[in-house]
Length: 297
Ligand code: GRG
Image (cartoon, rainbow, N blue to C red; front, side, top):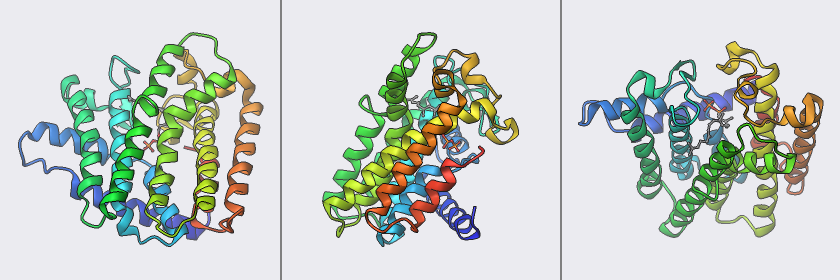
């Protein structure tokens, strides 16, 4: 990673963490246990990939970062809620997340369900109320974009398909659809929300960003599948081979490790070509994509 990107990532991470801290309710307010569980889950050390995509897109398009702070927070809040619910006994039944006990282990199941529910609601509240967000008509588009990406037609639908696929034989097209919904939808929404905040962006620019985000959204999950096979447990925070051991469908299981690596390379080329159509190949967004797809955790 270049020193420049490293510094940018650090700035974006700090920025969204400060914003998240400001929008989460204080633990001194009742119900304190719920607020503590919300903070525990959101402020745990994560990569903040989705907020970074919001900020990188904004910087690439010349949008002031305060205009997209609400969108950066909102997408991370949805991501945090999805992790809390994904870890529950009814779903993956995981004990560790981001190197710490999962929310239902640190608190209890009911609190974890409520923490996830209330983080989801908070995401939309932040889009509506953030003091530096865009004008009302654009806020409406942000709410619709995030709702579509996180609901049954997006992340939650992808999770449902993923759960239904456990232990069944899937084709690559089915797996790509699950990945595109479960993981890709929020990644696409991150880029799209920042683009919605850029009033001067034309349709061709929006279309190029859609192609870019579609490619990196899928590549991010295929890369995650690769890391499940060959990653370093101390970096990924989960045991190597845990997806396959649970019978979860993964890209390397269907296409082999080399096939999965080739797919990431092809999608990376697609993403780069989409950016190049608008002279964005040296942009913060291009740098972030290269880092994301070459990551080791
Ligand atoms: C429960 C509605 C519902 C949805 C759950 C996102 C999801 C759907 C489940 C999470 C499980 C998982 C491993 C999904 C794949 C996406 C992914 C790679 C999540 C981890 O995202 P990172 O790497 O995590 O950005 P950090 O901790 O860095 O934020």
